[in-house]
Amino acid sequence: MALTVAIQMDPIEPVDINADSTFALALEARRRGHELYHYLPNQLSFRDRKVTARARPLDVRYELGNHASLGQSEVLDLSTVDVVLMRQDPPFDMSYITATHVLEHIHPDTLVVNDPFHVRNAPEKLFVTHFEGVMPPTLITNDRDEILAFRDEFKDLILKPLFGNGGAGVFHIKPDDENLTALMEMFTESFREPIIVQRYEPKVREGDKRIILVDGVAVGGINRIPAAGEARANMHVGARPVKCELTARDREICEIIGPALKERGQIFVGIDVIGDYLTEINVTSPTGIQELGRFDDISVEAMLWDAIESKL
Image 1 (cartoon, rainbow, N blue to C red):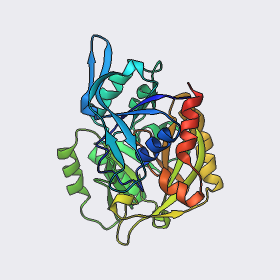
Image 2: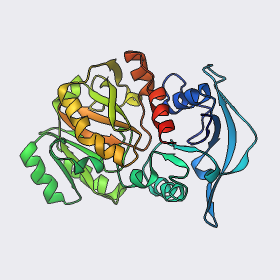
Image 3: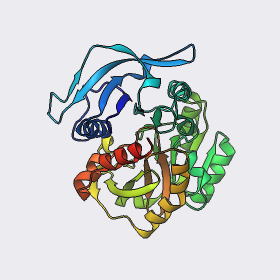
Image 4: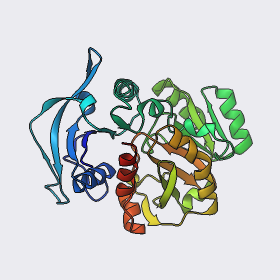
């Protein structure tokens, strides 16, 4: 089955071919004989009920420093392609949300991965609140008194922006930390959205597990160990990925959320689990498939393309 695939992503030239999940997906697509196009999010257009992109033919290869070749740009009618991979990095801002509205005009006749309607309605730190018994104690508010009361109850806290990504703006507030009020003022000045406040989970020192689900089914996970002196377990801020096995609790969480992901067309999802608690459901541009492939000797990208092709 030869498909035409358009990849909506950030520039492909600087990606790390040993870590980037979109590159792995593109490489697997080429192995299968699929025709690829690349375009930037700001090259997406909507006119007279037609969705187009100023795209360039793309070829990829696993060759450091020479991993991508791009042809001449052309206006591509996205209703004529088989698949659009929406893979640009967050932030989940109005630009991202607008792109989901535009792509909704072609889905599902053109399969958009992940389903743009449900991506828009599944912000990573909010979607998780729809599942009972999986989150640590969590407060979402701008109300100062509510935050102070939450601190009185749980003492040790994590504060983070509701629509942040990559660990940016995440703070660990210890019981004796005097910066909480100043941080609340900073958040209020920097963001119009509420703050998310969670009970600090000490098990983060043992790792923040990234589990990959393909079409609602868990296929494996990696553990990300925070760097010394760091409360965040994001790899780009120094966390170390290590091999791990999924626990019974991990699988229970995946079984709770998996059917909802499949029903909503969320084919490629990465969730974050600390100890026994689910903290985020990442549907916008999940990562981690290359690390998982190396640790478990599996091809998550092949599983993803099998799932995509089965829907066509």
